[in-house]
Length: 319
Image (cartoon, rainbow, N blue to C red; front, side, top):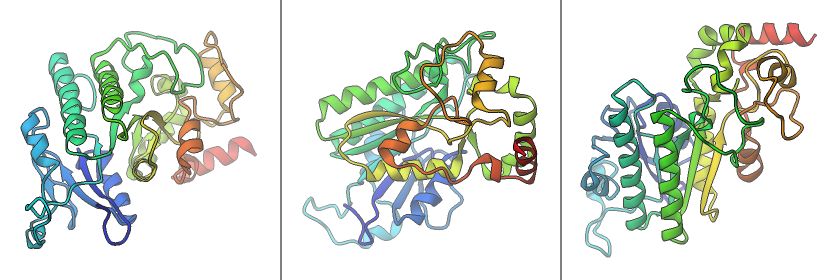
């Protein structure tokens, strides 16, 4: 049930993490109510954190049918006698965030089982909008052994994803679960976001000098990124866009993380990789064209405007 100001009730898993702690404030600014489900509390005065093990199906069902705040016990009982309002959407970001945090088998078990449990519970509880975090790593280069080429550029959602590592494989399994449940529960929208390298506001100054000056180090991320705040915008757009069923979206900002144009970088560092369409002069190789055209995403945090260093280097290069 939407709130009185038109916002939605959103359960956000993993909201205390690197991306979530910026996405949730953005969603709140758009009038949504948010319950954070995580093992670590979110430092936000108006958002309650419910601790839950998402690999436990029972805990997930309970979390998705929970009050958002202690004050909600004041609500009158509704038709089902509980007074608990059903969420309008679930955003599932909770996961082991990469390889080598835990053994591979646990990474796979935890990520796949938690994603399955969240999607299953949402569908069976009648929640018709689910957004899950997939990953740039599914394109098969980020955690590949040695120097591996992409199949083609730009990297778009119809790519033949064939990663060799456990983390990326767990994310592809999540996408397959999403597609299966969207088919099983007609009318349910499940959108998988292939999230790029997440950059927080304070990271531009320390990170981007190397990104710009050492482009050879950025091939594994396809010379692309997503500002954590713009990822919040993408979540909001996904929550508001209904009727698409199962979809995959690359979640990245518009521009390549180099001062040289995209064509020059690809020719220099991926000379044997075919380019399947004409690309924008500074278009990110992990392209966000679909999310711009389908959801109306607007890049608000171009790296070239995010630090004094970036502004100086880029303007000097193009002048």
